[in-house]
Structure formats: C-alpha cells, structure tokens
Length: 120
Image 1 (tube, rainbow, N blue to C red):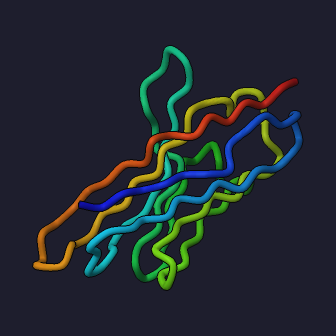
Image 2: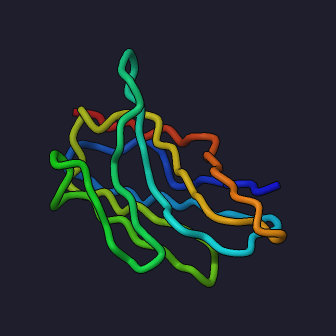
C-alpha cells in the first residue's frame, strides 16, 4: 500500500505564492511520473503539471511561467511552487504518483487533495 500526504494549501491573496508538497510512503520500489492536478468548483479535474523520473516537466499551457513542479527522489516527494496566483487558480489540488511497489507491483496513487483559495 502506498500513501500520499499533501500539504501547503491555504488562503492567499491574488499575486501571492504558495508551495504544495506531496510525500509518498509505503513499500515503494521506484517512482516514475509525479504530477499535480486540480479541480475547481463545478469543473472537471485538469492537469497542472507532471515530472518524469528523469526530470522532464510538462505544464498546462495556461500555467507556464507561474507554476513550477519539482521532485526530491530521496524523499519520494513532489512539489508545486505557485507564483502570481490568480482567483481562477482557486481549486482543490491533487497529487498523483505512479511507480512500482516492492515485488514490482505497479501503483497509481492519489493524494487526498489540498484546497487553495486565492482571494481578489
């Protein structure tokens, strides 16, 4: 079983910054892709950013330049630095981590979600 624990959400004024963290624990053998998604009220969950085991990143076009995804492989943790936040960034942010458990069983785990609220 792989568990993800997210932290770092909260209330921030427009133009401010937040840093989200998501740490994976459990019987992990290796981690491949890590990513962040978000779901705003009344909308579908959408991609924010992903990062491969080799450090290749991919961002939603609308977020390039404001958000930065990074990972610490030693800590099995993925981060999302969010700058110049806008009210439309308000959403529940979910991390997603994929890899293999010991015994080479694949896993695809989601965090519990952390609420980011950007006030105008």
